[in-house]
Amino acid sequence: MFAFFVVIIPSFVLFGLEGYNRGEGKGEKVAHVDGRDITRPEWDQQHRSEVDRIRQQSPSIDAALLDTDAARYATLERMVRDRVLQAAAGKTHMTVSEDKLARIFAQDQGLAAFRGADGKFDRELFQRTTQQTPEQYEASIRAQLATQQVLQGISGSAFASKAQADATINAFYDRREVQVARFPTADFNDKVTVSDADVETYYKDHAAQFQAPEQATVEYIVLDLDAVKKNIAVNEGDVKTYYEQNKSRFGTKEERRASHILLTAPASAPAAERAKAKARAEQLLADVKKSPASFAEIARKNSQDPGSAEKGGDLDFVTRGAMVKPFEDAMFALRKGEISPVVETEFGYHIIHLVDIKPEQVPAFEQVRARIEDEVRAQQATQEFAKAAESFTDLVYQQPDSLQPAADKLKLKIQTASNVGRTPASGATGALANRTFLSALFAPESLERKHNTEAIEVGASQLASGRVTKYAAARTLPLAEVKDKARSLLVAERAAALAKAEGEARLKAWQADAAGARLATPVTVSRLEPQSLPAPVIESALRADIDKLPAWTGVDLGAQGYAVVRVNKVVPRAPATPDVAQQEAGQYAQVIAAAENAAYYDLLKQRFKAEILVPRPAEPTR
Image 1 (spheres, one colour):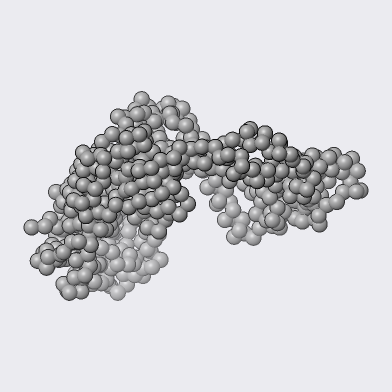
Image 2: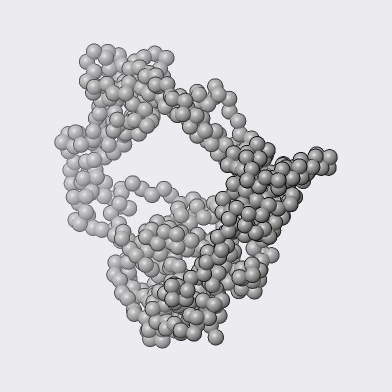
């Protein structure tokens, strides 16, 4: 009989990462925090997990964006951050209360799938599905909440005076009236003369710009969960059994609408204070018992719950798990229209009036048949995929000279591709968009011996293996093929130098005598309103010395040329409306909190000797 449970786990949990990567590095250290190392396999696993999660949330996202060197490095930085905060939480003995944990679990929709119709938690189902015990899951949630507290204390204490906030906000919205003279590189192209000898010298000095990258022709196979799913025939008996075992999942749970009167008395309050609150609650209970129709009015006048008092104590419809247990037990014990005795919780004393009940609704089998068939098919496919993945992994490893045995046994199509490089080509999809897969194809063993790569996870529940059938090493293209390109690059380089020289000369002359300055019409600019001017021009204008106006400055725009900027005057910002001013103050407070968090985190990194041992990837060229 088929095992009926919902499988919502990353594919690598199903059969272990070691099954995918037989030859993976044996624990190379990529970072360490507080005496503990982070290894490359841990890094790879975490990145795969993050990529899987993003793909599930956004199936249409370009896979190549998720597997860049920068994206992988960002994953490592997050791992280091988590370790630092965990160390800080441990050293400061931060804990999470049982009540808070209980409320979080009660509101966790993911855990609802592991509760039976009687509300009991199915421990075995949870462990079988998630590959961890409830205790391990609870410990991980405790750790997450504790680490959140590390920075919450800092961000919660962030403060800036109104004068500081106003000065910073005004500086951000700073405006200047400017005039600009542009010296575009293109205007100087005709003034540049280059000889064939110049071009040849440039070609030799910049050989890296004229490289033909290494390329390979490859063949590869992909084992995909969707393909397995299409071949699954669902048994009618399995579908009906699944329906009977999971009825509560397909309908709506019982909902109850209650109103309450709260007399606050925290558990930490003195006994006398709690006794006084309880006595007052008993008095109010007597009043509403005499006149149940006046419950809402009495709640409005006496309840100390700020969220519901003005609504006559109305709490709207809720299901089990939304309230603290004593309140919930009392509410679900009432019949419609009844009023409870005084109920004590950690918040104080409550009087509960049950206003309405929406009974549990369970749809008929035929109404949800299609949905159940899809779920059963998906679960069976997941199990079949696990078996196929193990076979796939073994076959491509044990018979490294050909993909045919694996393709024949698992009924997979051998695909081919030419002009494949080490990095994903623009528009690449599937396995050819995965950097890990491409790196394996260009590994020494793959290139020299033409062996299959190991089985590599290239997507959510997708395994691939490939082999190189033809390889061309990187080479410098002959000058004859790239002479026009080399000439254009050299002309542009020299034209940019001429533009800069001309701009600097004009700047010096106009600073001495502005009468002959040829400047564009004055415009008012700011960071938010750049008026189509390049960002370096705006920043230069805002940083110019305004003690003596007009102020002159020059801006080297690199390949785009040069700009001379004259700042005529500072333009005051129009006064913000009260609503806008309040919004800006809130945004500034967030910025201050983020800055203090960042500074505190930097301090924690030093304290716990956090270090990343792999170099940060270079910024992509534009």
